[in-house]
Image (cartoon, rainbow, N blue to C red; front, side, top):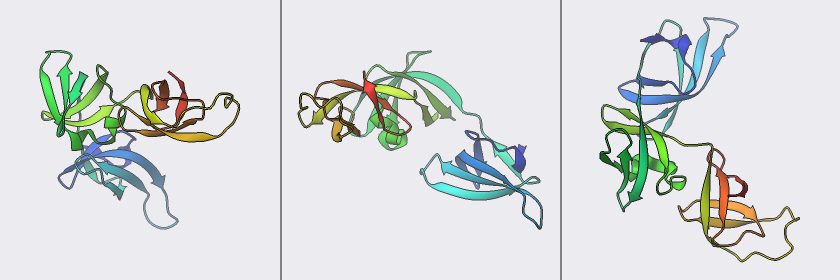
Amino acid sequence: MVDGSALRRGMVIKHEGELYVVTDYQHVKPGKGPAYMQAAMKSLKTGRILRQRFRSNDNLEQVYLDSRRMQFLYSDDTHFHFMDQDDYETVAIEADVVGDARYYITEGMVIDVGMHEGRALSFDLPTSVVLEIAETEPGIKGDTVSASTKPAKTVTGLVVQVPLFINRGERIKVDTRTDAYLGRG
């Protein structure tokens, strides 16, 4: 158990029977009354954002996730299949649990998966990944100086704004936090 003033970004807590990860927090000291912690938390079950106030005397149950190194093998219509790097066991994780991480995970990639009671809850992605362009308009020779962009769809389904000179089949580096084009991969 931790008190309400001990909240930190990335902490996983159990609140009203559901697991949440703290995405943002702010210590507030109003003119009248006691100070409190204003927290934004994301539900690990539904993805819903909850804004909640906690006082320093509120007791919260902190949950520790078991981080396991897993290699992505393949996906089908309903599951993403990973291999645990410790015991080589294959684990099928439902596509809705993987969520938006699906756009950055490529075959053979090794990532840390946060597990709780045998269930995958979070995916620790690198800050940038290299993805191949599957669809885009053909590049125009000489458009290397212009700041203009065009949409490009990667093999994972992510749509990224890229410079006009990028063509289908090229590999690009993408920021996983902002979906921004960082350069050629």
